Amino acid sequence: MDFCSLYSGSSGNSIYVGNERTKILVDAGLSGKKIQEGLLDIGVNPNEINAILITHEHDDHIKAAGILSRRFNIPIYANADTWSAMESQIGDVKEENIKVFSTYKPFEIGDITVIPFKIPHDASNPCGYSFIEKNKKISIATDIGHASREVKDNIKDSDLILLESNHDVEMLKVGPYPYYLKRRVLSDVGHLSNEDCGRTIVDILNSRIKRIILGHLSKTNNYPELAYRTVLSILESNGIRDGVDIDLDIAHRDRVGKYYSV
Image (tube, rainbow, N blue to C red; front, side, top):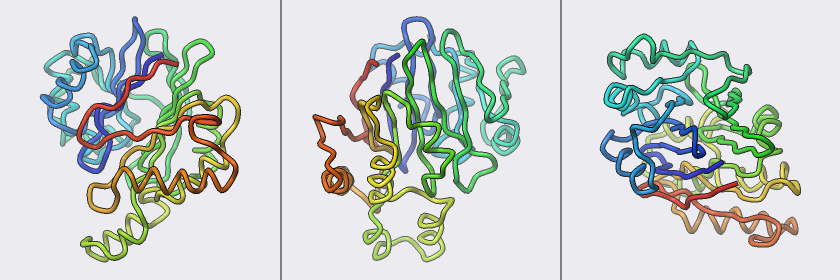
């Protein structure tokens, strides 16, 4: 399977997962034009996308979902609560392109098995995803207020993980966000901090996990070097070496990231 973060951050999110036969977008939270450009940058024709999977209904995850579905006749997959919450925001979608799944129940898109799992975030019924093809597994867990046992259990046996490293706690506390928004981000249904991301990696790390990509970085309360250094410091204090025990990378907010094959 192949993986590429097209865009990941507070400004918008869209992730590519696929292989030669099956091509999937997870979220479409930027303009349709930006997402099309990102796909073309990695050599994927938007006409070949088989599905758009939605994690939750916030605008930075659904902004272009309806646009891309109408433009390229792409089915949109979400659970029933998320569909109800986002339906009025994404415009008309062909009935045959409205795909409703049950969280916890695996389903197939082409030759890839999709496993949705519940995540702790302040949305209707948000979910992360794991993707399995043969003996390979890729997982995506962002927009998580804390690393719940369910999240850890679903991602711990993956070959590659996109894991949230949203904010630096001190930057957030002294930054420009209003008090209510700071409380929301710091809550158990907000976003995962750099420190908590590092501790989560320590908790789940095993010999199977080869790559962890830090994602959904805040534009206001974080920056890539800080996220990387904070997480790396926690890993190193637990005897985990980047480039030896694990490959650690950053998913960029405003540009296409590295293309991985697992």
